[in-house]
Length: 259
Picture 1 (cartoon, rainbow, N blue to C red):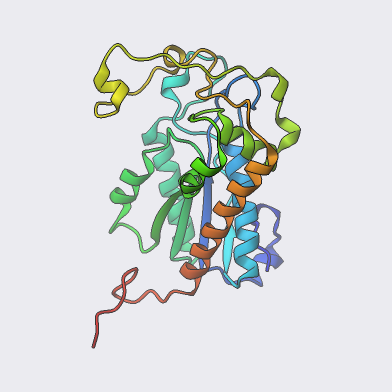
Picture 2 (cartoon, rainbow, N blue to C red):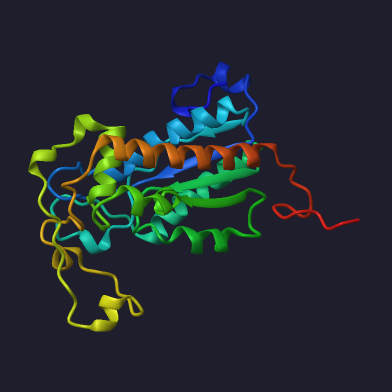
């Protein structure tokens, strides 16, 4: 079954029946010195490609929509050539995409997020609840493999780190300039509440980091990336398969009460 909408023809589309639409969302910002500005967008696009391929093989009727390459990057704008889209702006774009999907008869949609700054998605889903017949859910792909981190990764991090670099080496090694990576050093806040995490702010990334990286990527390998990617692909593909097969009755997405 074909699933990649941007490469399908009208004839292809008319021959398909889609149950689930998948929308990848990325960003455009630096990730240390060694990963490209499109890291989040490329990662989520290629990960979703692998996932939809696997889901299709399992019998899911999925369509992969073109990736939104921009995200919310208001706090990284002091680095050159960052492209930031406000939550309200990108929210309107996603709203229109949902309306389009609904118009074409698809009633299930998964937004796969590739950028930590896109935490506006969950409030958007709340806003759209009751305004559309499309069942909406979001997946932050990197959270799927968190349980694997302690057994695989050597260093903690958050941005351009060992995890993200390992995944990049697996998905797009041609864009990784590993020799240019720095140690991803970050600065501590003067407030212990922020350091401990029970208070939070929108972090000014040019002050919180040295060269935009957060976490040392030195121990990253393609082998580690393959483990993390495969885990994410397997779990998301299974979710898409279950969504595709599920009947949208009045109790959806919950189990029917006993008769």
